[in-house]
Structures are given as C-alpha cells and as structure tokens.
Image (cartoon, rainbow over all chains, first blue to last red; front, side, top):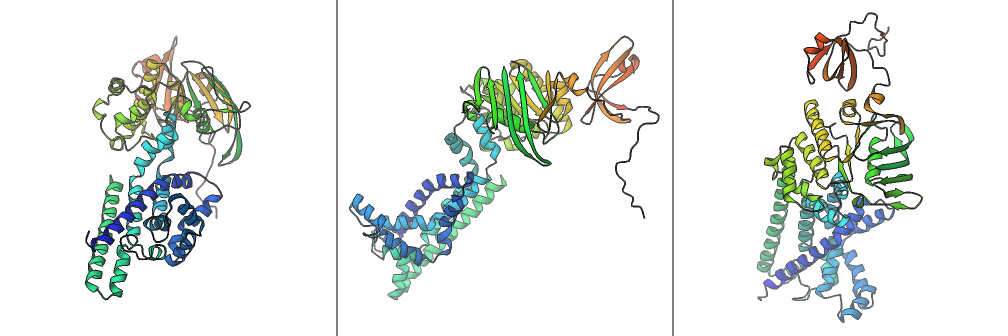
Length: 222
Length: 296
C-alpha cells in the first residue's frame, strides 16, 4: 500500500470498528436510559456526555493513564493479550469509543423515547417477548435515529485528533490517522499532501452529513 | 369464565381515588364497562392485560391465575393470551396490513388472515401500509390482529371513540358480528351509552373507581331518569310495539332516550333513521347555569 493511502485506510478502519462497537453497546445502554427511571441515570448521562465539553487532551490524558501498562485497563489488556493498549490500534479504538459515545447514545436514546408506548404494549399483548419487540417493533420504527447515530459516530471518529494523538501517538500504519497525517505534513511544510488529506476529509464529512439530512427528511415525510 | 377482584390507588385529575372492582364474566359474554373518562375503566382493562399491576387482588381467566397479590403471581402480558385493541389503533407502521395481522398469530396461517380480511372487506388492502388507511380501516385491522391470535379474552379500549359517528356505527355492527361468529369473551371499555346498549349483554357502570351498577344494558342504562330534551335530532335504535303504542329507543348525541309514540307514527320509521324529536312539554324546568351578561 502506498504511503499516502495508509492513514486513510487506518482512519476508515478506526471509524468502522468504533461505530460498530458503539452500535452494539449503544442499543442496550440507550434502551436502559430511555425506559427506566433510576437515580443513577442522571450520572450515567452526564458521564456519557462528558466528551462533548471536555478538551480532547484532558480525556486523552486520563485515558493515557488508564491505558498504559501500569494503568488498570492497560495492565488487564497486557495480561490478556500480551500487548500494550497505548500506541496501538486497539487503544485508539477504545479511546474513540469513549470519545464518540455521546454521538451514538444521544440519537438512540431520543429514538427509543420517540417510539409510541402503545406500539410496544401492543407487541407485548400479541405475545412477543421484550427482545422480539425490540428487534421487530422498536428498532424498525426508529431507523432515522439509528442512521443519525451511525453517521455521527463515524464522522466524529474520522474527525478526531486530540484523543488519538494522546493515546496513540503518531505511529505510521498503527495509529497515524488522516487528521494526524495532516498535522505532520504541515509541520514538514508538505502542503500538497496536507491539501489532499484535508480536501478528502472535508468532502467526506460534507457528504456524510448531507446524506444524513436528506435521508432523515425523506423518512420523516413518509 | 373470568373472575377478578382488584384494588389500585389512582391519581385522577380531581384527586386520588381507589379503583375497586369485583367482577365475574361468563364464557362468551360481552361486557361493556361504561362510565365517564377518568373513572378507571382503561386502568381496569390494562390490569387484565398485564400492562399495569393492581395493588392487591386476583385475576383468574378460564381457571388460570394471571394475577394474585397474595401468592405473588403476576404473569407478564406476553403470557396472558389476550387480544387488546387500543383506542388509537397501535398498528405497526413498519409492517403491511397483512404482516400486522400475522405478527401476533400463534400459528402463521396465510389462509386465515385472508379469510379475516375478506370478512372485513379489506382483502385488497392486505399489502398496503397501515399509515395510508382511514381511521375506520385502521381500527378494523387492529381488531383483526387481536382476533387472529384467537385469544382467551378480547379487550377493547374505547375502540370507536376516535372515529366519526357514521364510521363508529358501521364498526360497532362489525364488532357485534365478530362476537357472534367467534364467541370470544369480550370486555369493552366505553363512555358511550350506545356501545353499551347495542353490544353488551352485561354492563358495569364505573364511577370514580367504584361499580355503581351492574346488570343488563336496560337495567343499568335506564335506571336513572332520562333528562327531558326537545327538538333534537336522533337516531332510531329500536322499535318495540305494545298493545296500543310503540316504544322508540333513540340515540340523541351520546344520550339514549325512550319515547312513546302511536303506531302510525312508528310504522313510518325504521331502525337507523334520523328523526327529529320534539317534546311538547309545557312548563319545562329551566334553570340558569351560566350567564355571560355582567351586571353593572
């Protein structure tokens, strides 16, 4: 693979895994937040929303402490897989999951709350379990929210910089994603490379958001 | 056979009250729970379906205990084998009419679904999305969906109240026919006397959580004096000839009135006609309840 493509590929891979993991943990977590009234929910929601207001460096710094070989998670990971979390791809995936979590949880929670209660109750009275109701009634009726969560999580991860730099450094082929490659290129006064990466990111983000708004509009009309 | 005795504290708009109902419904009965809104009717229905939990009591259907606060039994709605029809239909917008009906069936049976749709005259709409249907059609689909799973009891929560008068009339007849054909024990909640009069063989009058009257529709609905009204348009529901006169049962708005006319007048009318009722009452009781004119 040519040197130019590597960061692009890495960015795509990072965003794909981050989004997938977020979807898998986002559905049960948002389901819980949307349908239960527990005192702990406020704390949970605040924790999930933290990355929205914290500087990425603050989050990155704490994650670095947590992920390194002496940190709790880093130690556990090292024992399990014999590999460090920091400065590795797995580490930035984990960091991105935490960083982009509000982008998935907020639309999904709103989506769960938007599904009329009586559709859910109708499904129960028709003999369907909670899981079957989730899969066949609730999720299909909140498609727009799921799409929003997916697109925002993916795009937000593509646009990530601070957290990845703190946790992953800038290791070629392992943690050097496009946003960091741009920074590197500018530092080396290699403006043509920076231009190309920047333009690709700009077009991608615009395209992603545009399709999201178009699709959401179409779904809300029908 | 349904036996239930439940108690639940409710928070009404005019303060808290205790819903306290003891009922027995025989196999194949059509019970209408009738009363003003906020009297606990819907809560009662939801407790039977398992969507709400009584504070205490028991619910037993066909010899099976669905709820018993003393023994700690509380079957979830999935295990209660009911057909529930919601006031606002609750059809799944992500499924076609056909799929909606198939969704709750214990054994998927394509022929049966088409048969049900044919009976309701909706065969041609099988693959339409429910959002494109009229209110009456939606409620029909909701009814078919509940019937298709052949439940032990059918629970109807104000199924006609969101429909216009004409549509409600038509659907009321259909509910009656379905009940006749399938004989499923049915409990319907309504604030409309016409529902109680036309559909029920048993009526329970519920007010502020308490059963005020129980019995046949006539016993319950005409136990209190009908208010005198005149020059009102009405729908003729029933004609009963006696020796010299005829008793007309009329629906005036949501009120039911029985009036006596001579046979010649009655002969010209048939059930379903819209008629104008004028009572030539001298000195009717007139009482001011509100005056818009301010005294200066």
